[in-house]
Length: 239
Image (cartoon, rainbow, N blue to C red; front, side):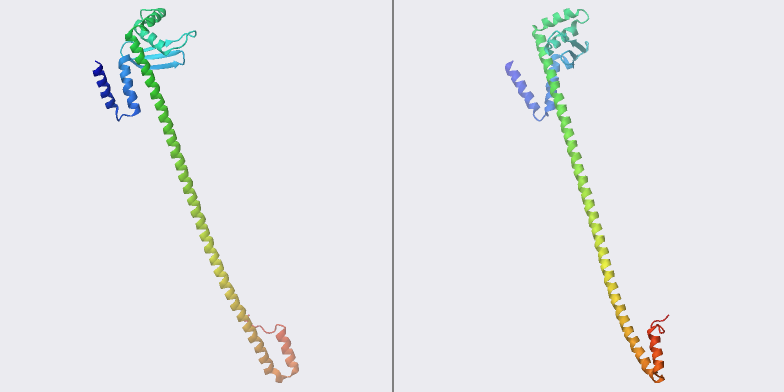
């Protein structure tokens, strides 16, 4: 018998290789449910109310309430649940408690309660795994959110940089166009000033020619002619 049990345990360990932690706990829990006949143990009110759900057709859900003056014990609650499941219709609460006390000395129910406690232990482990997985999912979600925020910030920064480069390029183009226009204006201004100087020189030269040409008409005529030239009688440009 011992050899077969060891061989069976060895085969079970081989089967567990490659399973996740959750799967291993669930497999163990199925074993404990089978041995205890209890598929769920729930503490409804801490240190007070326990709900036991049995795996079968006979009154599957049983609640036990710990008296305020008693010290809470989950093991005691399970013994009472077994007794209540069997004798609730025929025994008083005191009788059920007496039966629960008797069960503590029966190997059959000691084994049942022991395995029921293992069911509760597996439930706690699965609940802890659920919480851990939720925390992992939350952290992953936070990381995705932070990564997306960094990506959006980087894109916004790149867009701002591109907009700044485009604005600087436009300013450079406008500046170059302005400088080019100013250079052309200065060149044109110089041309006009040069032309004006040339025309003024030609005007003065023309005046001297006219004066010399009309000198034979006398000094008085020449004086009137000079006054007219100096006082705007003659327009250099067309009007």
